[in-house]
Length: 158
Image (tube, rainbow, N blue to C red; front, top):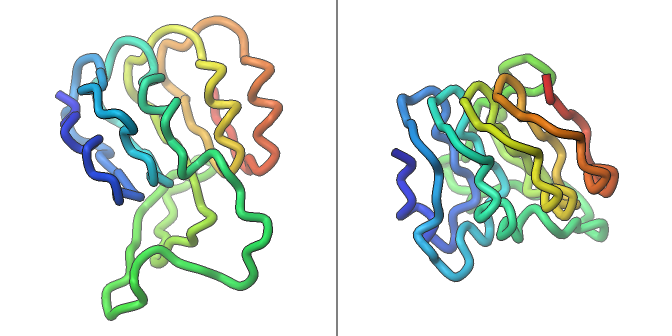
């Protein structure tokens, strides 16, 4: 099952649970503001079912606001010897980011068994760079709210 207790971690910015054997419906434990600073949410290649996790997406504050005034490159972490890194799927390619820019935001829910429609609330994640909902059981229309994602660089709904 999805480890819902993770939603209580107020400083969590990167959550990658790719390619495990997690399964079942994702439900919130009722934390007031789950995942408020999350910038990367990757739960791809599991066996999750039910609707897309709207209760979480609705609270992804770290993906809602763009910082157009930022000058220079800023990375996650404290610039110590250890650098935060992650492997992501971008435009169908596995890419290792050896350092993660603070402006990089992505959601990857691909290769699960999610059902239902794409939630309109995704259109409020204005800083989102990538969205991958491919290889699920998504139905319905593509919400007009996705047109609000002016920073979106890749979208996979296949």
